[in-house]
Image 1: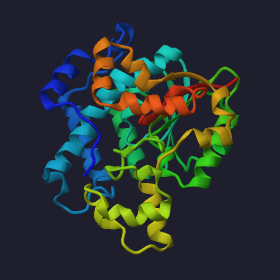
Image 2: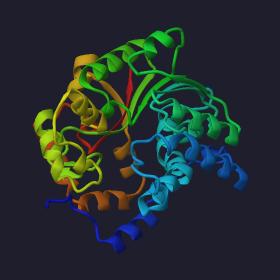
Image 3: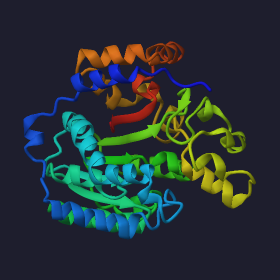
Amino acid sequence: MFQPAKLPAPLKKLARSFTQPRVPKEISARYRDISPSGMRAIEASLRQHYFTTSDTCHDNNYLSSDQGRADLEAHLHRRVDKFRNTVIPWLDDARSLKGAKILEIGCGTGSSTVALAEQGAVVTAVDIVESSLNVARDRCNVYDVSADFICANATEVHKICKSNDFDFIIFFAALEHMIHHERMIAMKNTWDMLSPGNLWCVMRTPNRLWYYDGHTSRLPFYLWLPDDLAFSYSRFSPRKPFGDLYREMNEESKLDFLRRGRGVSFHEFELTMKRAEDLDVVSSLPLFLRNQHILNLAVWSLTGQRRFESDLIRVGPKIHRGFYQGSLDLIIRKD
C-alpha cells in the first residue's frame, strides 16, 4: 500500500524538538491556566455531551480503548495547545487578535474558541451540533472567557450575523464536511459579509489536489476520485470504522459519506470569490510554520512533499502556493 514519505521516528522526534513554533511572549502571557478540578469539569462535560453522541464512539467501551483515550486526551489538552502554539501566532501575525471581532464557523467543543477568546478576541462561535456547543460553553466557563454561541448551519450565518462587521471569518475544519451546494453558499455569503480589508480564513481542510488523503480515508489519490467511485473504493481504507461503513449506496448513505470529509481546492474559491490568481492571500499556515525555522524546511524537503508541490506550482504558477499544500490553511484579505 502506498504511503506518503515519512521521516524515521527518531528523526521525526528530534526534528519536532528543534522546530517548535516561536510563540511571541505577548501571546503566551495571555494563556489561561486552569485547575485540576477545572480539567475534570471539562472531561465530565465531554463524557456527558460529546462522547455520548459522536459517531466516532461506536460502542460503550470506546473511551476505554487506546483510540478513545487518545481522543479524549486530544479534546482535553492537545487541541488547545496546538491551536495556541501554531494557529494563534499565525492569525495574530496577519492582524492583532486583541479586540478583533471573529466569526468562527465549526467551533466544535471549543478548544479553538478558548484560544481565540483568551487573546482578547470577541468571538461568535458557530457549530451545527448542539452537544458540541454544550461542551464549548462549559469549556469557556472553566477558562473564564466569553463567547457567543450559535447552533446553525454555515449556510445560515449570513442571515443570523448580517449586522456584525467581522475582522475575521474563520472556517475551522468545516468546509470539507459540507456537500457541494452548502459549501458554495457558505463561502460566497460569508465572503460577501466582509468589509474591504477584513480577513476570510480556512483551516485544516484537505486539499483536493493533494496525492494522499490523511483526513478521512488514509488512501492515496482518494481525493481525486469522483464521489461515487470514492464511495465504493472506501472499503479499501485502513481506517476503522470508515473502511467498513459504506457498501450499499442510497440517498442517506451517500449523504453521510460526503459529510465524512471530501477535499476542497482553489476551484471553489474562484467560483465564490474571484480568480485564484487575483485573490489577496495574506498567508498560508504551512508556509508560515516552514519559515519559522530552517529545520522545518529540511523536514519538508526530506518527506518528498517538496517535489509534488513544485509540480503543482509548475502547472499553475500564478496561483498562491498556499493552494498547493496538503491542507488548505489560508488567510485571504477582502479587497
